[in-house]
Length: 610
Ligand code: ARG
Image (cartoon, rainbow, N blue to C red; front, side, top):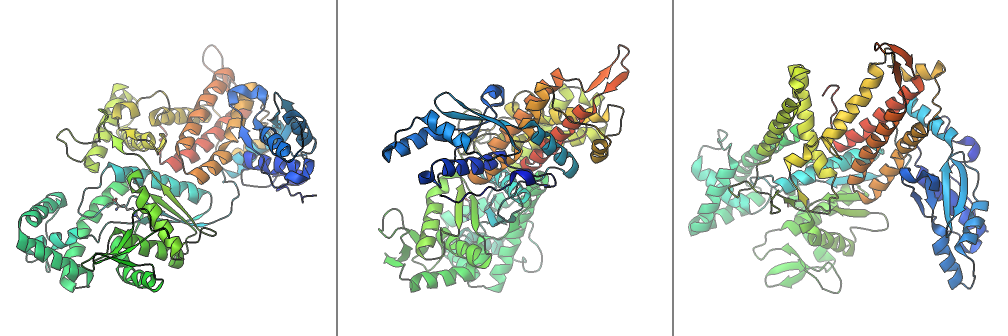
């Protein structure tokens, strides 16, 4: 018979465990074991568990849907058994678990699983005492390559998406306890630097002694590009400058540094406003490693001459598009720097998992890089994982590519400024200035502005295109940042206004306040909150953050149902508090705690007054 292992022995379940349990994972373990016990020939088949929509609780809280597919497998092996019989066999073999109240077989062979209320009470108690803690998982070193704009060029809305999504992925993985490297793979080494340096030498001959006033790099870039396109002699010099720069020439390096500084400062302003942390490791960093990786690939006989270039096929079959590793003039490319980078990340930084948050348009490029790295023995799929967290383009409300009215790329700082203005308009429209102090109003304005821009992006499935609309994102109904921020503030205010001190939750619990989850809506809310670890585990697999947004929205709607049906504070006709239902207020606090953690991951900054 198969060996049976359960993660948790019934008797030793989490009385003193701080971490929250992913209920789905626990049930997968439990039912996988039951399948192995009931049908030893099927041992190893993972049970399929899915949560049941909270509004259909009569079918249980979770469902095991394995019986149907197991019936097919058994039939193929010559055993005829109905899914219902199989489901019954499985249920008989499910080990006792403190999480599970009852199980029942329904319909064609579904197993409905009902959560045990005692367990939920204990889990909420732990959450209140110890805070919201992540579920257990194997710790990994993960490198997230995100934002990654190009020096001297505009950081555009595509980079904004990468910045927002990347930051949230980092926060989620850090919360789970992983060692996360946040890398800004700046485009700081392309051939465009030749013309920029040449132009700098002409315009500011004294650049070696004093910083040139190139605050408007955009204009500077355009000027040099114009000369590059029109003036043959300038073009020649520009090419020469690239060679000098990549060869380490001191003056060219100085000029290059000055140009990079201007860009980096501009980028940093955006990161500060959005509360994003990144470590810059630009393409230039890999110069010496590009030389090395070319030698390495040559030594493995992976480079092929092609019309003066050196190319490499990602596939042994030489199909698809080859990587250009060395250009005919001896220079390196985007492919070369990514090959050097992947090698550095795996071999020197010792990352096990690489996450590239880059627009969908670069999918072929990145697939080529992983496969080429695998072919070259750099990337080993048995121990490494690489994900392209791709995302769709940003569209304007007209359904066309997001541009300014005059057709230019939108400057991110202008976009954020407009967000601030629109957020303020919205708050004034609601006459919040009459209630809030100027400082509170400013905090609310920033929270709403940056929150709505991030949330609008994160709440859509990132693989789709996404329409940027301030009007939509600032709506205060539906799954929006504004709705959630208001809801959160309201939930927090309940304990503040009940006339008792709720600052020490453990003390309140110790003094005998019970959370009994007796009302149907209390029970529903508790079950919703306890899905948090499941949601995190799921996102750590598919890296789709809109699930977390949907979860926040679900918490708020389930909370409303609870609040409409269950008195937390009872007042008499003259408005005096006559009864405080402490257990329910604790449930409000648990809700606020889970939401707060979700907000942190999503980059939303709640304010105490809004
Ligand atoms: N700088 C690139 C761009 O703006 C994105 C870089 C993404 N990261 C990478 N390792 N290729 O398109």
